[in-house]
Image 1: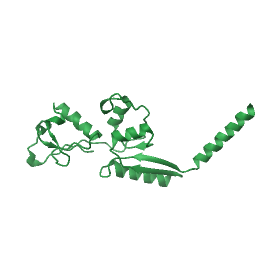
Image 2: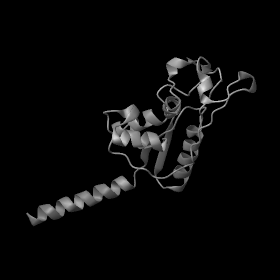
Image 3: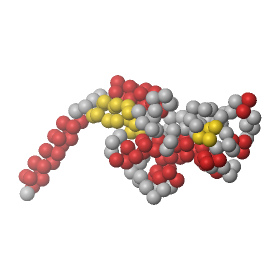
Image 4: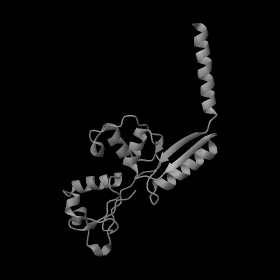
Length: 177
C-alpha cells in the first residue's frame, strides 16, 4: 500500500513538472477593437508573453464586460477586462445578471478609473439629462456595461430608453469609458 502511495505521488509530481514546462495557452477577453479594452488587453498579453516563460496569452475581441464575465464563467477565457460595477452585478446576480450569479470570479487589479462622460453639441440645446427626452441618443453597445450605466443615469432623471431615439452613431448623448 505504501509503495502505491509513493508511486502515485511520484507520478503526480512528474506530471506537474511536465505541465509546468509546457506552454500555457490562455485567453484574455477584451472588448471591441475600437474601444479601450482591446489595446489594453493587447499590451498586457504582450508583457505576459515576453516576461513569463512558456506563457501564451491571446487577446480576444468581445462585446466587453458582460460577455467577458460570461466567457470567464464558462471557462472560455481565463482573464478579462471588465467594469468593476458589472463584475459586482455578476458576482451577486443583480441588475443585468439578475438571477444568474457568477460566483467563481476574482480580480487581479484595477487598470484605470472609468469615468462617465455625457456630451452634447452646443447647438443641440441639451443642458441637462432631462433635456434628452425625444432626442437622438447613443448609449454604447447593446448589453454593455456602458449601456447599463446609461440606463442607471437616465432612471435617476425619470427617463428610460423609450423616452428617446436610440440611434447609435448620431451623437447627442454619449457615455464613454
